[in-house]
Length: 457
Image (cartoon, rainbow, N blue to C red; front, side, top):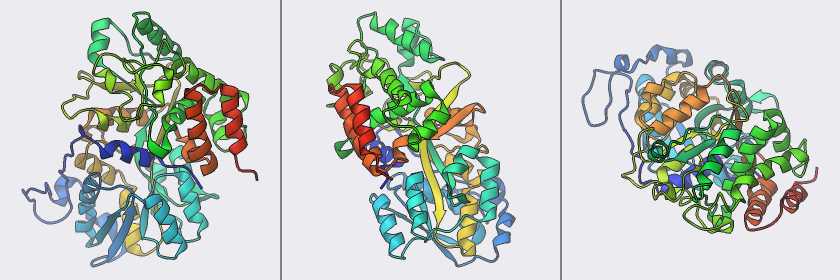
């Protein structure tokens, strides 16, 4: 009953990835150092102490099944990152990726045939799985790791009815604005550090006769979701994290003053014909443009700014240099002031349906800083909120930027709101009414319609 996950959206973007390569080198555990095409090395060079797994007993010959929506090609670095665990413990990890994961995992759980481990991309889906009675609480070792390596906000998303079930896995940052470093340098534009400065920059670009922003919200049955991300980002910035939490849980109404203020703030950009849609058309053209194409005109010089998540990097052509001194880069969508750091994003959580020692051991491994660093070395286009992640291990400039944002001590991370709302709202009314709003519907009608769609208790 909950909306599509940010992970789902990531997969849509990455399915057509042209510019994100995989660096498939991984330090794996056990044996003599090898020099082969797999990039495997011994435990010492990987910095992994296999003795840490002895607390779970003799695991040789055991198997752990993993079920996830992370599919080819993103599944390859995941599988590589398990080699250290497998070599240390003798456990075989059986990986199954499925594009229909989010519906099938519920079917399997309710039928009494769940996997040992599932990577769940939404807190709402996690709650549904717990409600089946098949999910098991995370072991103390995993809970302790989560306390050590992740913030309280992340642990709260893996907690249902006061019990901790799922440690975080990967993460994505949605509070980004894509731009051309060359254009900024040539025209003397500076990266804004407050919302006021962002508006001033937009006005400055518009004064040149160019439309500063470009956007696209087309996504098949999910058309409209990029607008919900805009609204969520501005809900955080205009009203603060406490109001955001109450809005997501419907403790304050969707048509209340806080929500209306956020929509109006977004409207200052997305419904402003002087600001959009650079290189494409007028405001209504946003709805007719796919989200994959929404920011590509930055490369053409007909658009300067595009608000979209870290995973949007996958949509630029293969030859595009994505870096601070490249063709394309991104900056943090600023808060009200320079010290305010609200961060909108998404991620996956590791939930178990079995409490066998080998399952606990694998959960433990995935919750460590060791695994986060192994995964970082194995792939590009991936980041974690794990505080033990060494940013130097990240191979992609956008990953580095995302990790710095997540690790900022002032960061206040909040999960994508529509992913936590009931499906009647998050993946239905919110998306559809946002699309109607872009094509001309007024704000009052929009928020009233979404409020009316909220399930009655």
